[in-house]
Length: 432
Image 1 (cartoon, rainbow, N blue to C red):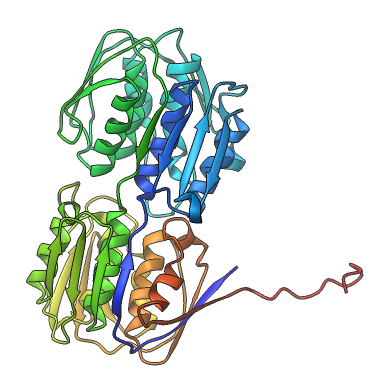
Image 2: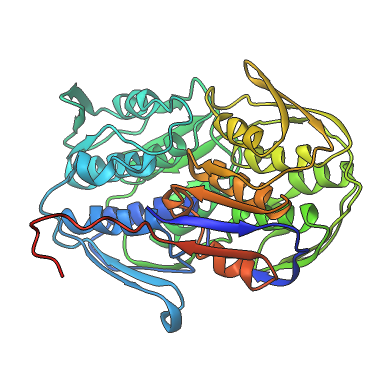
């Protein structure tokens, strides 16, 4: 397992360009299952979850060309000859977003068999909302041996009201409804930019979708979808992580290729904490502040403060004067990074869904363990301001959602390097 070795104390100065949004790219790749024609996606991030999805689609018979560098982070997906509408456990055990193939497969192929997913251990993300919605659309569902099996000759439009807001559930059923007979009205939908981006792609493919980005989405089903070309939106969580890095290290960072309109809740909270930011239509410049002020945070569905930034903001709270109360309303087990920050000298007390963080506390380098994707990022941020050397283990988590994060940070002055685990030689293996 790779590790990061980080020596803190350097202000970050310069420019970082944001990659495409992983959480928009994954449903876009799944949407290619809805047509036999090629779907071309640009601004695809080079992260582990994208490679997992490529393997998943390929195992079903799709042709997936994935190029980076001069290919401009582009993929072409052609699902003309699907031979196995199944997502096995071996392919989905590291990624929650695997459930996104369920709706498209049922809509296009009439059946699907998808393993219950894996991914970050941050709390329950039940698939029951997907299943209820598909049943409303006329699918027959069976669950056994860790798999969900869905069958439908053709889905039928229906009214669906989500019991709670779900991003992947909204995306999954949105894709399924595009090929359903008649009109589907979905209520209490997720409003995240990634949902609107998926709808934009689907409409380019010939779908008839209105209201994406609001709580009510209407879909008039069509008989067939065609290929399309689409550019994935910037990754707002990656952009926000780098903005926080600039604020924490008393630096001067220009984050380019992002969409400030997607970052409103974070920019407002940082302003409350004393951080100055300026933005253009596609960039945010952040000027750090050595005298950060405490500010409470409550995670909410978009456009509220994202749960995916809660861990990163906790690093800010450790360096702010006063007491910050961070309330996690989305997932029930998303404070595992707090224990690792305590090892670095932070003053954090967990009370159920609340974390009470008392600052300003000097942090010192330590050996810490990454527990999930965003926790990994929070430990990187804490290490950037810690005295001495921090070693972060299990950084494969961060590779799921951040493209070359160490290279981007090193380019603006961070002392960060990646090291691989040296495995002992096995006796009698014949290895030289």
